[in-house]
Each structure stands twice: as structure tokens, then as C-alpha cells.
Image 1 (cartoon, helix red, strand yellow):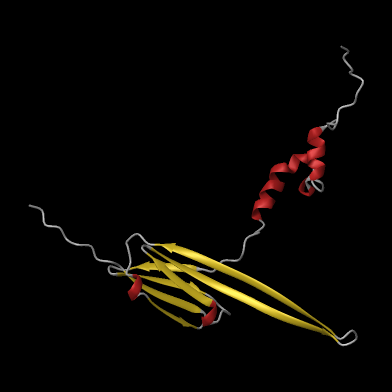
Image 2: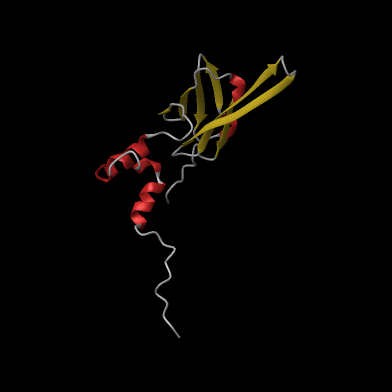
Length: 153
């Protein structure tokens, strides 16, 4: 048996340096600004845009206001379940590009959806929920379920 230490390892000489070279976020900043770079990474919004929702609670109902400027009524879908309301906005767009020189037509289709789920503290009456939409403001009135009063003996 012989120990062959002359074979070179497949590991990089400096793994930490290789790691920083791999991630582009570290290539344009010195190591001393590592925490600033991480903060900037989390400040970039990679998520779909959301819409503003305000909830007003009254004794017998919840009133939900959702600001949806530029959205048509048929793009909005509402769903209620025991103690929550989900507002979903669907958007689809078809763009047709015609090339007169080659007589080709290219269709480009995009589809997106944004949704918000609003939890309620009390169970609600799903079948009595009403919604209106005017001038980019969705108003949903969700009646609360009334519990049964129990007499104490």
C-alpha cells in the first residue's frame, strides 16, 4: 500500500473566494460591504405587485375595501370560506405582431394573477356577502355569523 499525496485535489484552493466569484452580488462590492449587499438584495421586490386592502369591522359585518385602479370588473374574482375572503385579479394580454416582409404573424400571450386573502376573526355568512366595484374601488360587505346564546343553569 502506498500513500499517493502527489495527486492534486479537485477542490479549489480558496473555496470562499470561489463562492464570492460565483455570486454576482459580491463581484462589484468589496467584502467589507457584505451586509449592505445583503440588505440591498432583500430590498428588491421580486414578488408580484400587490393591491392595497383596508378592512373595517363593525358589530354585525366586515367591510373590505380593495384599491384596484385600471382593473375591469370581469378580472376580479371573489371567494369566501368560513372565516376568510380571497380577492384574485386575473390579467391576460395577447399581442399580435405582423411582419409584412416575411408575411409572418407572431402572437405573444401573457398571463398573471394577484391575490390577497383577508382572514376574519369571526365566521362569516358566505351566501350573504355582497360586492360593488366603482372607479377602481372594490367594496365587499361580509356579514358575521351570529352565535347561539347559551343559558347557564
